[in-house]
Figure 1 (cartoon, rainbow, N blue to C red):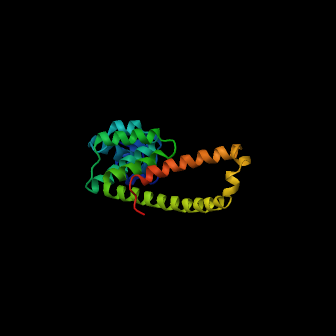
Figure 2: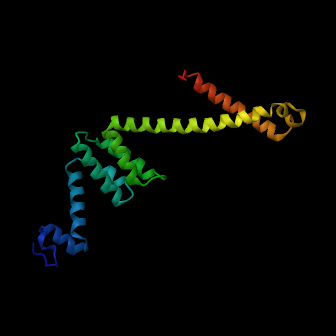
Figure 3: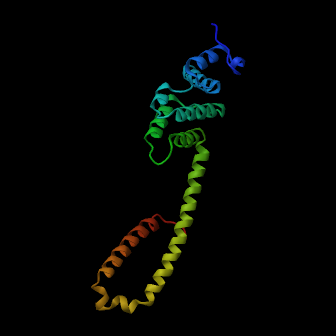
Length: 184
């Protein structure tokens, strides 16, 4: 196959130069696309998963992350790749590429994924404890107004009914947490 010469693309193999001249794509972009097609042809990346994804960037991310997982000794089965691609394409809060990175990481490193979730939960408990402390101080101030709370004038206000409803809700949530025998 004879391919016309172009400035700088002579260093690439003939198929890449041919595609470059036909599609006017950057040769590096062609190499990435051919590597992805090769990964699909070799059975490492699911064709169905790639076809599910909304962007080329997401498909490139999937191929890269699957390759990393396999290199780490944790290959991602096609069915799991397809599930990840489906969730990534349906995501509205995060980019598909970000969803793919997170999910492949969790699948290929389950022990680290669990550590990450445990840390996030621990951080959340700390934040909740700080909010609880502020709430406790607010309740202490309310206790100072105990006589006002018991007055007939206050008991018939909308604020009193709302306050009582919130207190019942908090009591219910605290009962659920404390009944799980949390240590003090």
